[in-house]
Length: 344
Image (cartoon, rainbow, N blue to C red):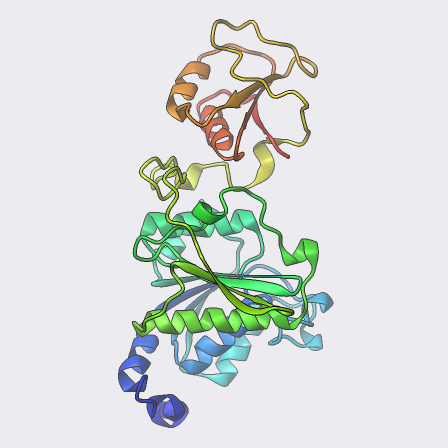
């Protein structure tokens, strides 16, 4: 089937035409997650003529997916989302070349995969995974296309484009709700996915109006609203001049999952109590709590604690729960294993 006959309704548009069709044909797109948002993104990009698509997905189809993940059927329950999605696309458009990654993306492999693509589309629903993708995009200077849907609303935006903020500038803490924890009305992810696919088309074709300095919100009861997002955060841990995450340590960092976290609250958070000597306050079976203030250097703190011979746990905390994780990761990598962070 010829390109002209397949895409003639696009090609006749004066604003689109053959030039734009060739641009989307040659663009290299990576879709991470093919659930409620990823379904329409994949369906429309592959249908419109994006012929170089990578897909990352590791999950299988469940009955509870079907109210919002529209390319799957009841007969697909129990099967791989990846294989079903690929079959769906190839039956609709045999020109599409799809590269599949049947895995859960981690920071140990993200740079290798993401570096192969021009457009990175996050259709996931996990804040740690979003940070993995965001941080890799910042380090590789790739635009990060973001979509989220919860309850009866959703958001679309493009981060890390022409010096725009990254996701961490807007959401510096691990407190973004997900549809797994709050539920979602079935049609909302499809609306967000369609809007997200449209942003990808605009970027690939060099059209104006990309959502790079604002977030587009949709809510069932209030319709569409646009929010101007703040400028880049001067203290962002990945995209600022004061960044702690870089291409040298990103793949080894232990901050993208909560396994270095103490799962309990403390009523007393002390300022640094190791300034003078190793006479520490005993709290909760001799655990040592050290609060990291915003003005303290991670490198200086590391130099201070790495050579201390302390048998009890060192538990670190900080305002955004991120800098403490970076310090703990660095200490652990270099032999001080009994170090932890506090979670809310």
